[in-house]
Amino acid sequence: MIPAAFDYTAPSTVEEAVGALAEAGEDAKVLGGGQSLLPVLRMRLAAPTTLIDLGKVAELRGVREDGGALVIGAMTTHYDVQRDPLVQQHAALLARATDTVADPQVRHRGTFGGSIAHADPAGDLLAPALAMDTEMVIAGQGGRRTVAAADFFVDYFTTALEPDELLVEVRVPKHTGWHAHYEKFNRVAQAWSIVAVAATVRVEGTSIAEARVGLTNMAATPVRAHAVENALVGAPATPEAIRAAAAHAAEGTSPTSDGNADADYRQHLARTLTGRAVTAAVSG
Amino acid sequence: MRISVTVDGTKYDDDVEPRTLLVHYLREQLGKTGTVVGCDTSNCGACTVHLDGHSVKSCSVLAVQADGCEVNTIEGLERDGQLHPMQQAFHDNHALQCGFCTPGMIMQSLDLLADNPNPNEHEVREGLEGNLCRCTGYQNIVRAVQDAAGKMSPGAGPEVERVANEVAGRHSARTPVSSGGE
Ligand SMILES: Cc1cc2nc3c(=O)[nH]c(=O)nc-3n(C[C@H](O)[C@H](O)[C@H](O)COP(=O)(O)OP(=O)(O)OC[C@H]3O[C@@H](n4cnc5c(N)ncnc54)[C@H](O)[C@@H]3O)c2cc1C
Ligand code: FES
Ligand code: FES
Image (cartoon, rainbow over all chains, first blue to last red; front, side, top):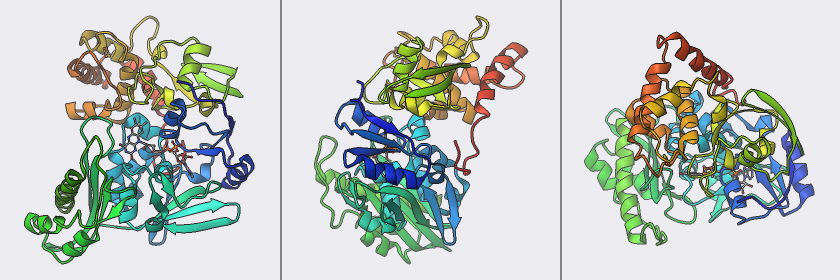
């Protein structure tokens, strides 16, 4: 199908983009990579009056270092994130999760910032963003503000972004030398996660010194498995100890039941996939 | 809106509505019907073309987003009536039945080889994850891609190499990964 008519503008700086967004009013939409928005427009599930395309805003692309953090521009594509040497070195969990997103064509266009702003509960980059304590840098008419991932994801497809604000970049604290794995459970090619687990651990000698675990699609927003993290710290990096810690993965969660999985099955998956993710991380 | 796009080596200046999808621009305004539409959900990959050297689903890109860019489609692959080695390999290996998925399969296979010139079977299947085929069961498609990879590798013979190099040359515009440009 063909989208309903809209006006289109392609600013070349963040300032111009913020101005255009304010001017176009609340029925305007930001266009990132378009890999979620254009399918929605084609189905006519939304009909914004104006699209503000960030594709020509060069300052929103690329990965740089800033002290103890990596700064990833919102318009950096999944393809570029996957291959970026800084991401590989300091945020391996993000690279592994991005590998599982969609398919090569979608990864060439879709962006890290677009995924975060879209906030689909089955999106694969939200749990890594939460687990690594990232911060979202947001621009609006009044200037810039920073929101921690834990406060950014509010509800299904809902974030702390106001309609007149842009996500500019994501600050990822460096996890240099941490091992990581993203364990995604789905049934067919290109499919979204039924449940997935993002795990990154720092191993010292034969035991786990620090651990971060995030769950995908166990609630309206990504969930942090703190009980698992606490049980892993100081534990030996053995399958038995990891399995015992993973048994806590579903504590405090109340996932939905839908055509893909019932709630109790999702909880079972969370425990099983957490065990697999941490085991793969420590041995990888 | 006025756009300027190079498609299969020819430059076009055209007026398009902002809502025009790239695939509709190619088919309806330029008459390049080799690229097809197979779904409404961005899943099938039949519409795959290369945009500045990277494969994209042309049903999920606006024509205005291609302004100033280079687009390569299935129609630009043959040279002087001679099939591109990837097209020839699909023919030789019976990698198509109805043929509807084939333009997208071939364009995505070329993208895969640009990143990984010698993929194993698993890597071919992963690389074609975004392309669906209702007919073949994929076995012969995987064979064709591996056959083409062998034939497009250096030392495969002057004619095959010439065509393969021309296609590979288009990929040289690929950006280094962390510079942030496209
Ligand atoms: C076939 C298919 C399969 C997919 N499978 C997966 C999958 O398995 N896992 C997964 O995680 N994703 C998947 N995706 C989605 C993909 O990752 C998208 O790239 C992503 O959801 C959105 O990123 P985008 O840049 O394309 O954003 P767009 O589609 O351009 O935008 C999405 C939303 O975010 C807003 N937005 C975008 N950028 C900004 C910004 N900088 N500031 C403020 N708002 C912004 C837009 O206004 C819009 O509301 C799939 C998509 C397709 C088509
Ligand atoms: S037509 Fe199906 S993905 Fe484009
Ligand atoms: S040959 Fe018919 S869809 Fe692939």
